[in-house]
Image (cartoon, rainbow, N blue to C red; front, top):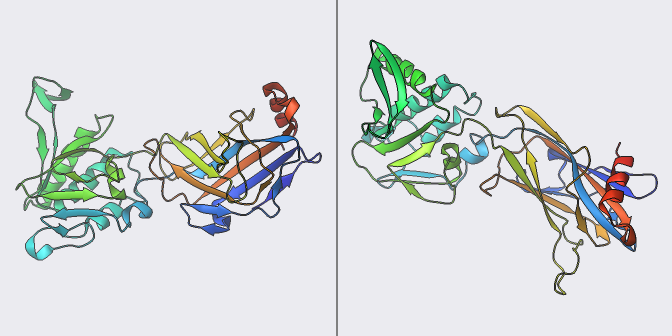
Length: 335
């Protein structure tokens, strides 16, 4: 882990890269600096994010879809990881169906419609419905609208249809969801089978990964990435924060980083021009740094395989601890 020391020993920059972790996993990496970051005596340490660069994450990443915690059972059979074509449960594992979206642009209505129709084809018992959103025709012109007075949902399902009928339904569904700002629908069983769903894959459908759901269930396809990331950092084994009721605790730090790119897989960056949002700590040595990322629901963000984080550590004498002087010093030593 590179450490850049300023000439007057008042500023240290630490550069972390996802491919250069010292230990841990991709989703919970540990970094050991080449040289410990030492806090001079009678000084207070201030830490801030100077820059963050990453490939925007997606919930359709393999770390979500290949988790051993994933289940989608139909009458006790886990059709998420296995398929039971002989009993007409599913033509392939649902994991395979979801994995086809990994490299697809899910902001495109046609790709989402194709995914939804594949879901219905693979599990013939499933159906999707759009409650309260109906197509109404006036003089041959079809309009899609929402009304509290219309309680008949638009429902789609597949049952032994021909390729021509499938193409027609796919075209209709694509046109239908292209009018929606969020692709929200109800997933249900046509034959009242019992389904249980749980695991990280549910985040693809806007649901909590640590909760068990049953059908029917209203879901929303996550067509874009998360709006922001929470960077959770711990200064590790030797760094302790200031006294709190005579107790010393680990220096756990949280930064919130906005993501400007909506399409997963694109590169985005965040630059803190004035190094605001500094967090103070008061301990002598930083020997190890642990990181992990969470989303707005405080759930772990998986598959963060390509990112760079630049941290700036400022050291100021305790009697000089003021916002103005801290900001001035931070700008002076930016490189």
